[in-house]
Length: 91
Image 1 (spheres, rainbow, N blue to C red):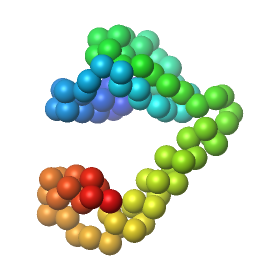
Image 2: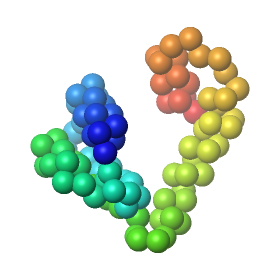
Image 3: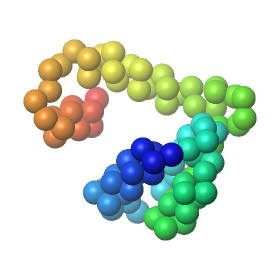
Image 4: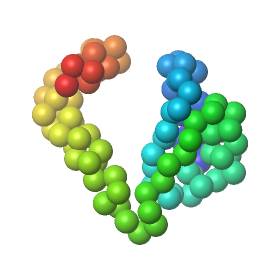
């Protein structure tokens, strides 16, 4: 769960998330851990999880990110993270 906690912490510090943020995930152990629960309380976001044994809850987002990778991110050689973010926002 360390990678998940560190990644979310870094993102929340950089992006200064607003109230009402919802982070959706599956029910993997890193998202059901005490550390993740504590993080959600510290940064005031609401964890949201797929139903147990039902990956279809997240199918729309899985489809979107698959299309983003296939049609955009895998076709361009990016020089830095700013270029990736810019292209992703345009997509």
